Structure formats: structure tokens, C-alpha cells
Image 1 (cartoon, rainbow, N blue to C red):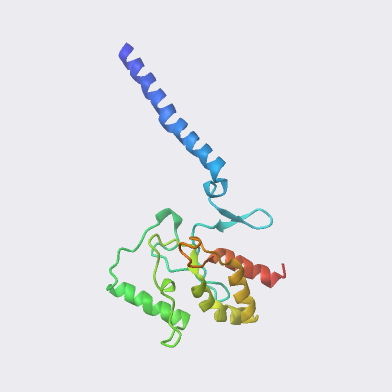
Image 2 (cartoon, rainbow, N blue to C red):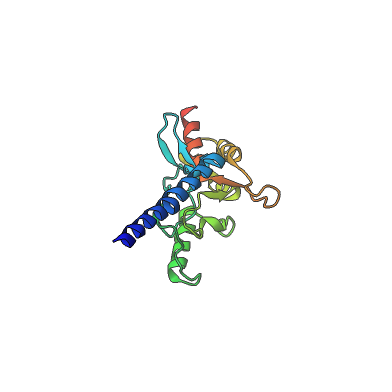
Length: 187
């Protein structure tokens, strides 16, 4: 009986240290060093309601919005992952043909690769500046505004995550779409 009680005490102590203690330390480090990221990089409306996250893509299909990269997981953050389909798969080819048609791409105006290919996790919230500019004419027409205004929104949202080491310029699709909505409301 004495060894059973000792075993229970050791198990409880181990759980407190290894589960609660470790989780608390990691949470504290995250809250201290990178609170924005540790709390999900949430994007809030002016009234404080959560719109989404800077780290997880959302599906936009209406013509007046920027469209993200395709997702093999239906933009479900709980099930991130690729499709595991071969590039020669008929399903991949069909999805590519469908996307080329959806964007109205032609040989003279080819579709940027990331608008036809899903990212590894299927949740990439960013597209390249080039892919955003590619969508500008459709968005300007759908919103009834000048294309230069849409291009200004894109250029205002551009950033280079790798600085001079990786100069590719990206934009966050959700943030661009929110900026377009503010543009339409005159904010």
C-alpha cells in the first residue's frame, strides 16, 4: 500500500511538472517574446470582433475580392496538409484547367503559378505581388472602381518577409480584402 501511494505521488508530481509546469513556461515565454503570434495573429475589426488570422488562409470566391491560393484541405485550419497527388494526376490537371478558366488566363496572359498550385499545408494566407496585380482588373471591374486604386491597395500591403535575403514581395489576402472594403466605405 505504501508503494502505491508513493507511485501516485510521483505520477501527480510528474504531471504537474511536465504538463502544467512546462505548458505554463512555454505560454509565458510566448506571451513575453511574441504575444501577437502566440495569440494567433488575429485580425480584428474596429469594433473588436475577430475577422481571421494573418497566418491562415480563408476562401474568397466573389469577384470583388482577391482570391487566395487553392487549398487541398478546403481552408480548414484543423486539417492542414497537401493533397499527396502526383503532378501528373488527372485531378490536379482538371483543377488546373478549372482555375485557368476561372481566372480567364490565356497564353498571352498566363496565370501566376501560385494561383494554380496549392501550398504544402493548403493554408498559405499570402500570394505574391504579381499574383495580386494579376487579379486587379477583375476586382476593379467588379467594384466599379479605377484599376489604379486597386493597385495602390496592393502596393500599400506589400512586404518582403525575407528582407534582402529573399526579396520576393508578398501580400496577405485577408488584409487586402479588408483594405478593399475600407476603400469602398470611404474609411
